[in-house]
Picture 1 (cartoon, rainbow, N blue to C red):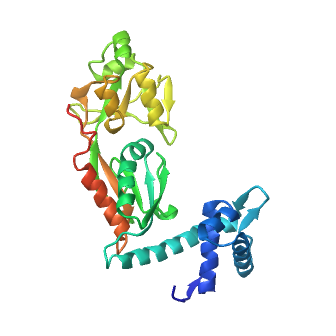
Picture 2 (cartoon, helix red, strand yellow; picture 1 turned 180 degrees about the horizontal axis):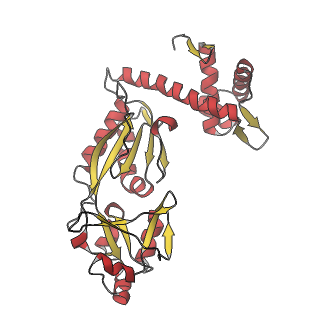
Picture 3 (cartoon, rainbow, N blue to C red; picture 1 turned 30 degrees about the horizontal axis):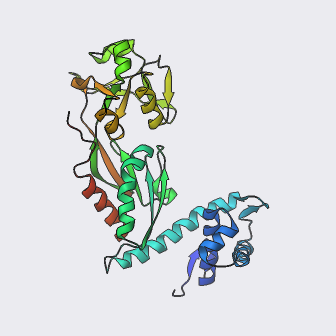
Length: 317
């Protein structure tokens, strides 16, 4: 590694400083000195000395240490967030240089919706990692909104129209339908709704997002119309749990087609109100705007697009 210096909040950042910063970030990510030392191929003592040097140089305590736990101080959290971005920029520079030979390398950080990520993104990622042995991956599964810039994420998968953010670029890689479904047993007992208005007489189960039930959209003469029910007996923020409740006859719900293809094929779920079904929603890959898109990010986006060009969840209607 070449020696260089960089001014950071008034301090000269030398090569030794960079090593201590990398040690600090590694400790926080690993959650312990011992595991960080093992991952970095150094002794635990060397890791501890690096953290002490960094704290002495900065004049602040970065970590709260006890025999059984390790946590960031307030100053440590601020410093960690900034240092992670700096190290990410350095890695991005290295991987951008790798584009000269077109070989994806380095760590790729992904944020994925839980059900879509586990069922459809992970198989693509596993194949990608086998194809490019110099790439490693860090994956977070969540249905909450993630700020890619603040959290140092390379790629996020999002469903629906994206939020306006000039810092981000998005590319549609697939589409999904939202289907109103119930189990055969439920429909036999409660009857089949013929129009969205009939849903007022049914047990409607809603998905919670940010603590709020997500309304169902239906096609009408006036355009897409929202339906919600104040009498829903079951609200949950897990798509998998919602699907299971519907399949077990608890009620009727709107479910994404990518998550219920097996249930539809096996007739465990029956779609209803298909004449009122709205147009499919885009599934997008979102990534930060950068002058040079790294080979690893570009290659993974291309892998998603090639795999999903005819997505398996666009079932015949």
